Length: 399
Image (cartoon, rainbow, N blue to C red; front, side):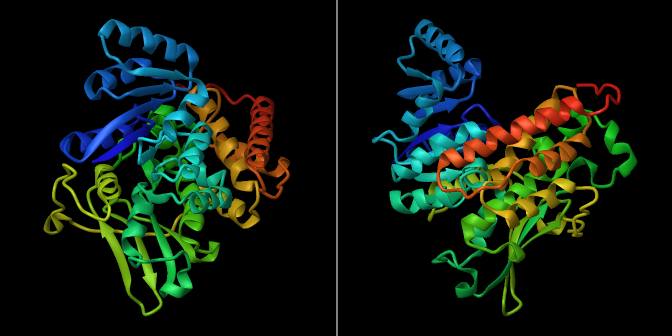
């Protein structure tokens, strides 16, 4: 019986995780559920799964949830603010922590889980994009086990040798290939991108995701952050990590070996597959996902990414090359710009421009402590906000 804390229980990854968990009540017990501020949905989950603890970043939302559960007769202890997330991530009775809170808010609890030696199912990109080597050191020193559940990194994990030790050259690995769908604007004329709406950007052709990560997929910033993650997760140098556009999203990533072999992991674009793999690893369990019928696949297409169309991907490679606090600054600038785009305040094409401006203005420093990452994060947000405020008015964008 694995005892779980779910950080990000109310998001799409949380939904998929709880679906898998509910299929195997003899294997998994939900001890704690945590989210950012969605008290109503967390209430419904607490009523269904009866965790011992629930945590919300937002204090007002935590008070609201506490009152609702009291009315429901549900005896779940509710914790508020960021310290509550850290608490549930390091509970002694919990052995497995799913880290899926989007954004910088997920960094501190994920780091706490690593230091507490938990089995971490990692969907939170910021732990590696902001924390980088600091987070990997915490995993090593805390004796934690790290299992990626992003579909791409989970696919790479499955295609690497069973006892891979973080050195591609020793494992005969030539390069890692991350696949990308290309999002909803892969073939949209470049001249039309400035006029796309948030709803269009969130209409992913293959995956069902939250709005922020859907926009990241449309700009391909999501893939750029995954390149940075892959560097730290698998010890691969920048030049050994490539991106290939694969519109069907059936092959989730590939590993090429020095003998010419290329191993790929295939499945339907359903997050329950990598989640089930990580939950039960090294065993396999039913995820509720339909069987992949290869005979019915009309084609599997591949193409190189267009860096003119996907400038955010180029920026991520630049940040990885620069190192230090540069990835943290890029992530912060992107969060600021995407938030403004979703609110209808800027155009889709302003996202990459804001990120590049903030990166240029935020000095890169060595990443010695978590405070270094937080300082770069705050500075980049300030620069991105200033650039967005100063940009020429170009009309409104329908939110």
